Image 1 (cartoon, rainbow, N blue to C red):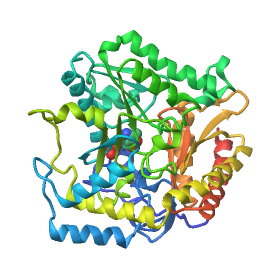
Image 2: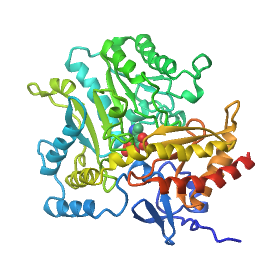
Image 3: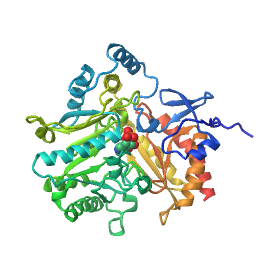
Length: 456
Ligand code: PLP
C-alpha cells in the first residue's frame, strides 16, 4: 500500500471553521496547512502541494514574499494602528492615490474596509444613500445574478443568490431581485451556439427586472466580471456594453464586484478593463494585499461621490479596521511587486496556455466544459457529455465532495470543488505561475477525474 500523500487530518476541539461541516471535521480532522513558499503550500508533515486556488483567490504574488513582510513590519513599528474616522494615515493616503491612478475612468474615491463582503455591504448602502441625496429616495433595491456569491453579512447575503446559504438566516434584507447568470454552456435552446445573442438576452433580463420592479425602486446591479459561483462564467460579447446602456437608461448604478477579478486575476488590474466597461463602483479585496493581511476597497466614481462632498453630508458607515495602516503598507508593497515582476503581463502571456492545458481534459467523458478567463478557470463535470446531464445532488455529495476534492489534494494539487450551481472544479493559481504549473495541474487531475467517472 502506498503511503498517503495527504497528512491525516488534525482534529481541533475549539476551532470553528468557516462553511465547514463541523461534525465531519471533528470525526476526520482537516488538513492543516502550516507554511507557504512561492506557489506551494506545505502541510504540518512537510508535504508540498501546488496551490491552484491562491488560498481562496487571494495570494496573487505567492507566499513568503519578503518585500511585503518587511513593508508590514516597518509600518507596524512606525504606526501599528490608527482609524480612518476623521483622521488619515500616510499609507492609506498613498494607497488611495495609487488605486485612484490605477482604476479606470473617474473611479477615484477609495473607501477602505476589511474584506469583500464589507465592500459589497458598503456599496449597497452607498447606492441607497446616493439616491436619497439626489432626490430619488425610492431607489433602494439591488439586482444580482443567479447563483452569484457576494458575501455573508446580512446585506451582502441578501444580494447573494445561493439559496442554501440564505435560508437559515431569513428574513434577510428586503429588496433584492434575481436575473440569470451568463451560463452559456447551458444557454436556453434558441440561443445555444450564439454567444452574442445569448449575451443580449441575458443583459435584457436586467432591463426586464428593472421594469418589473419599477425603475424608481432600483438602486444598483451587482455583477462580477467573471462570475465565480457556478464556475467562472465569462460575460458573452456585448453583455457589459448592453448592461451599461440599461443602467444609464434607468439611472441604476453598475457595481462591478471584483472581489475575485481585480488585481490581476484576469490579467488586468481591474476585471472591468478586461471587458471594456466602466462601472460606477468597484468592490474589491482578496488580491489587494495578496492575503498578507485583510483589506477591502470600495472604489467609487467621481459622480457618485459628488453629493457626499457637499455641506455637512456624511456617509455614516465605517469599520475600525478599514484601511488599517499595516494592511495599506502590505497592499502598496504588493502593487510594487505587480509592477516589478510584470504580473499582469505574465497572466496575459500565459492565459492561452492555461486554457489549452485545461482543455486537454476535455477528452475525458466527465469534463463537459472548460471556461474562464485569465488565471480563473473552471471545469464543469457532467454525467453525460452529449446531453450535458449534470451531476445529481447525490453525485455532488459522493463523487465531487467525497472523492474529487480529497483525491486532487492527494495528487498534490489544492483546488476547489464547488456545487453551489452545477458540479465544477475551480483553478485560480498565483499570478507567478506558468506553463509548468498548468501541466502539473492537468497531470494531477487527469487520473482523479478518470477515476471519478468510474464512480458515477
Ligand atoms: N464578492 C465576491 C465576488 C466574492 O467572491 C466574495 C468571497 O469570495 C465576497 C464578495 C465576500 O468576500 P469576503 O469573504 O472577503 O467577505
